Image (cartoon, rainbow, N blue to C red; front, side, top):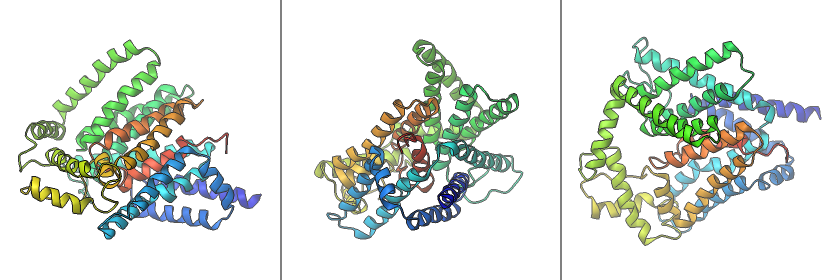
Length: 399
């Protein structure tokens, strides 16, 4: 019994460290992940672990999603790229089920505080770079101060952190005055940080989850919620537009590229629209099971030469839905969406206010984010998805 207790404590300490390293360093997080998985694989009790995993419809959906990628290797042409995709997707095969079996209800607050501590550190460094107190490093510039990761990943992660802090402010009735002031300060400073960094997808998600939070705070008062949303969100948007040169420039560029997406000189959004249009030509020819796990680059190159030869080719359409449809067709898309369905279903039935609220936010975030990039393939965002998914959708009473 003491060995089991010690093992459980070891897992919890490792998970707390992982929550801290997750938004800071790829290599550091990977070391902890390897240690956790090795301990799990070598610690025996396999039948109990297997039973626990297959008792969760969400975990089964995750495994099916991965095995469809594995099956897609059968009809793929580019095996090398296929193995590259399988490697990126391994979280859904092993890491998520492993984390699901070792998370502990009593430690959830420690996972979250550890994660928020790391985000606070990231935010402080971001401001130090923005104010030119320290030199930019890694991905950061003075104009776009996201030091530990690109803005594509940073802003969505920051959006979730803001939500967690605001949820604590509004719903923790026992919070002390000191912690209330501390949380309020960081909610404001993180919100400002959201608009001095350049992740447009994260900014859109921020506005979205802020709207959802207002509904959650006012509960069933829909008219009041809509009135408040119509006042707060436009005010925040206009304020950010006036204060942040980067935000204003990114908004203007976005509008211009949407209006003139066919211009060969357009970047980012213009490219994404063209990626989608060309990808749909592939999807129409292979609607059911797609072209295979590794064949997006090959097939896209062929279509691009015909439709838009003046544009560069790509290995990723920067849209998770499009990527899955090309690779695995409608079958693959249904499999991916089933993951979000089971998340929403579980959270809606939870007796916990925190799980009901946050368990809805996570899938909503990713369902929107995936319109702009393949967020289930990127290290930081895919790790955040499975890490939070491990304890938000675990029935602790059942197993």
